[in-house]
Image (cartoon, rainbow, N blue to C red; front, side, top):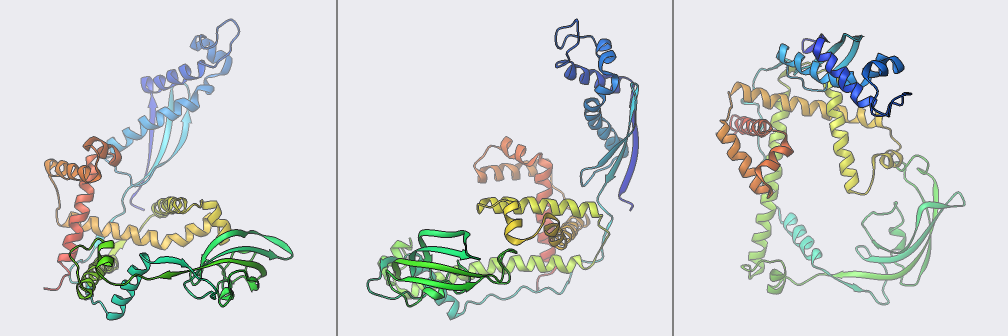
Length: 418
């Protein structure tokens, strides 16, 4: 492929000698040679004892960075992923590296105007309004204990439960004083339903089967749960009145009609934002279909790895790690990698579309404009400008983001209804 550059470079003379000297200083600190205190042996004595080859690993690590920068500068290359490198020759006088550098692939975008994508009109139905109001009431609902009553949907039951599979205790299948909302589908199918109609103090035996899509070693297996109901709680929804409006912080709302208008506006704003996101996604998909590009497998792999790292962070926020995820889902790293490849290609194409538009429209910003934007961002984040630059790496990244944002705006402008 045209964007794959294989370049060989020899580092010799003073540059290589300095790397060997630095390696010697590092390794000599721990060298034990008869007749010398640790770390004080001269270089020629050290080499006679351990061999010049012992200095190569650390010297090569230092030399790689020097050689890489020379290759980039001499060949005016901007890599898009980390290069691969081989040492093709090494001696006490020189080292030869072969770098494989991948730059951005050649991209052609035939058109990004009149793509036939339309933004949907936003409507709020009476059903949506009522559902949202009930949700808000539910957030402020008072939880009360149900006396001499049966378990019903939306109740919360406090239970002890103990699961048995194949005559053995189910791993993680035991709990005490566990609060379970009926209808939340927290447990496997049949568990919550099996408690409906029972009362406080009841002991219930549930004979269930794990679903087909459960973890590999349990799916389709029968399981028995012994459950004791300690307490039944239910929600008492607040009345829609001025006290309710004040609890919501809506000081200017006095009537039910005003409240409904406020809720309707919030729903509409939310749907407008969702529509805007969908409009952009649809535009990028339509423009990507007009994109001519051959993406290197290495670039796709890099994007997938970035996505997997992001997914790992998401799992950690939910108290899981990636290995637990593989165990629960019965999948492997290779499975996840393959699963994410289509989305990675989609993201890469969308990025190339935006970059191509930015180049075609000759979008650029002055140093003063970029710095002003960076200061604004720093203020929004509540940090100093220097901290923001350190986090981003450089102002060039801020400038790149500005160009991409403006390119997206142009894409929308050229595809909006007149």
